[in-house]
Length: 147
Image 1 (cartoon, rainbow, N blue to C red):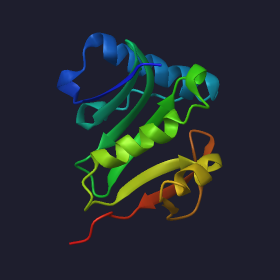
Image 2: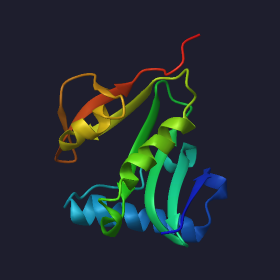
Image 3: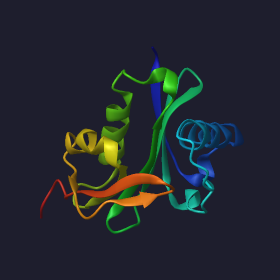
Image 4: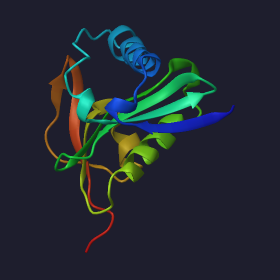
């Protein structure tokens, strides 16, 4: 499996890559998770888009908001055919390293993935809630470097 990573800003997304991102997010979040929600939320323009490719096929994706305080990682997704290969963990680690070490990171985690995110250093930071009908919890990763 020949994998490659690309970190792209809005202006660097080609129509083909943007289409692949939207298609993958829809396949997993809308169809697989049976969650009707408006994915184009007007926030993609201010995000860093981390894309994992096998050859030219998008198989993993996350968006990172570096200009928020705390920084936010979201829309983490791995193509269903590529699960079970620790790609979600690699994608999350890559997302974390995209954030300056002095900044806290926030995620809105699906509740059933709490242990996965805890294994990466995140901890729950509040009560659970429903987001688009799916149980979520707020989680944070403290700054990794103190000044």
